[in-house]
Length: 278
Image 1: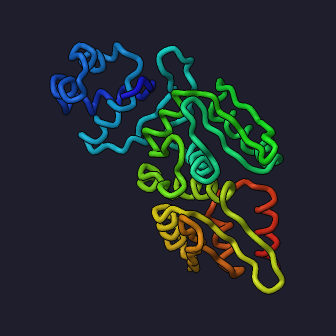
Image 2: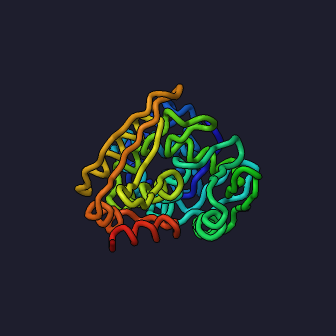
Image 3: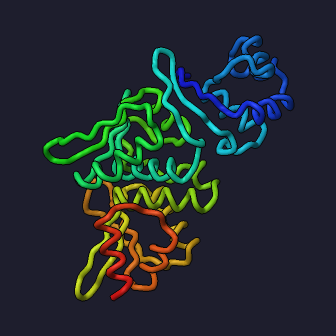
C-alpha cells in the first residue's frame, strides 16, 4: 500500500461508514481501530486511497460520488482537484492513456508543440492550479510534464494505468465506463486528441484510432456503437504486437462523432469540420 491520501466529502463517507463496523474495516485493512473510529467522528481530514476504494467496494458505492478536494502524500504538498471525476479530469485521463507515460514521480504527455502549449498545459493547470507543470522540447517530441508522485499513485490506483509500459494492456478505465456519457465521451476526446488521427483525401477521408491493446480496441468500438456510428476494424499483424485500427469514413459518421465527442485539438477539429461540410 502507498501513502496517497485524499480529502473527501465527509458527510457521504460517514453515511457509508455507519453501515460497516470500525473493527471490520480496521481488521481487513490492517489499520489501527482508533484511526477508523476517527473517520466516523470526522476528526481526520484525509484517508488513504486504498481505504476509500475498499469502502466503496464493500458498500457498492460508485467512487465518483465522492468529491475529492485534494490529494497528497507524506512529505508532499497537496495538489488540489476539482470534483473527483468530471469531464475535465476524464479528458486528461484520455490524454494519458493515448500518449502519456507514468514514471515513479511524474506523468508526461507528448504531442505537437502548439497542442501541448496551448491546450494540454492550460488544461492541466485548470485542474491542478498548485501543481508544477512544465512544457518541454525533447528533440524528437514535445511534452507536458506533471511533477507529483501522489498524482502518479492516484492515476495508477484509481484509473488502473500502470507505471511504465502500457501499450498492450491499457483500456478505458472501469470507473469511467461506469460513469455518465459526458465522462465517457470526454475520455474519448482526450484519447482522440492524443492518439487518434483524421485525414482528408480526395478518394477516402478517414478518422482513425490506433492501438495495440485488445481491451482499448473493444472499448472504442463499444463507444462508437453507443453513439450509433458504424466503424471498420483492421488489424496489422506484421509487428511484434498486432496494431488495431478502428475507423469511420463517411460524412454522416464524422458529423455524429463531432456532435458527441468533446475533443480540443485545433488542427484535427478543423479538418473534421471541413469533412462535415464538404
